[in-house]
Image 1 (cartoon, rainbow, N blue to C red):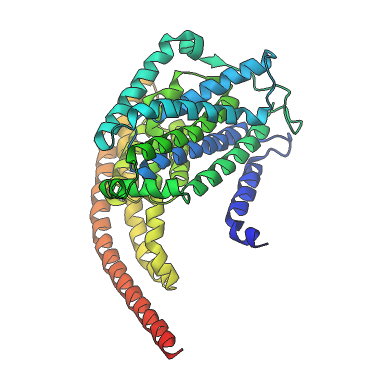
Image 2: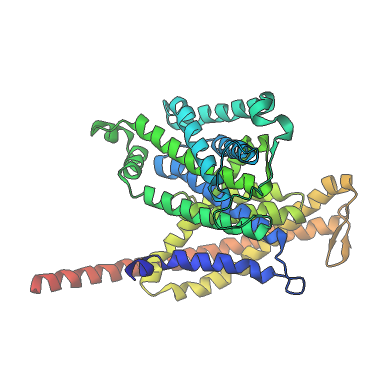
Length: 436
């Protein structure tokens, strides 16, 4: 019962994630939305991948530009395992294919980690970038293992399931992804509480002191790198089961950049930050990319804004509000937020309008597309739309600046009040302790 009380948020999240696809269920035809299930499965895989990346950057302070290598190598190993099972070389349950990818990621994480963890900081980042390019090039050269440009296609229907599921439908695959995502997240959460996780934090915060008290930071980095490879490999194994193919894209720099974006946008300081970032990045890639040719620009701008104004990421913004929430004064921020929202919305609309005008003037014109809003055709060569977009951007920016100043004053006053409240409480506790 105590365990249920402690872990009820995890159970609640599992129930919500299982129920969410039914919001898009076609009851007349009796089937799920394939797009939603694939999108949710992608989020699950990328969440594992981003959490494994955070084992390096968030826990050990290691900025990697080639983390997709571990994802991709795990995916290739899992694909070869599936082919061997299909050929009858040996037997393995479909449910354990991601584990095969994880072991592959662990092996290559140790081998590559032995090389890259000899350095740290900038040198480590540069070596991982070189390693990523090296493996990307090798993926096109060594056909036997990587399959060249065509990659390695598989058929995930192996008829070796432990629970009698054939995994022919996206719903069955989604459930498998969900189970592995929770197992991997729970294990990575536990790893942060182990001595290795604590020493990794120590080497991140004070490299010389950790070395002085007798730990070898290089060994700590190697173990952390190999373990992150294990979890990235699990993500790779799930990737293969979802898409039934693995290509050189899985080891590319773009895939590594996705993990970096997810961790920075979500926040490396909290365990669940990369999951929040993954949701945002995948929705931008899969949702906004269907609506706009300039979706990469939006991702880039969001990344810059988060790094400049919210370096703690989304999870950092949530943590900032915790003292005010604990003091029971969070509702006092409702009015400042309500006043700032229209100005922020005007800036956003002005920016999006201007970007889309530029996009349709260049890329859209080349593709023969027309820019329309609500059925009204917008002439991107006329000056009026550009003036409206620029006016919304400038006026919204000035308005937001004014509201931001008021918001800052209210925020500072609230935080000062919270400190005074905490001080009074502490004095009360000390008086009670002295009297007892």
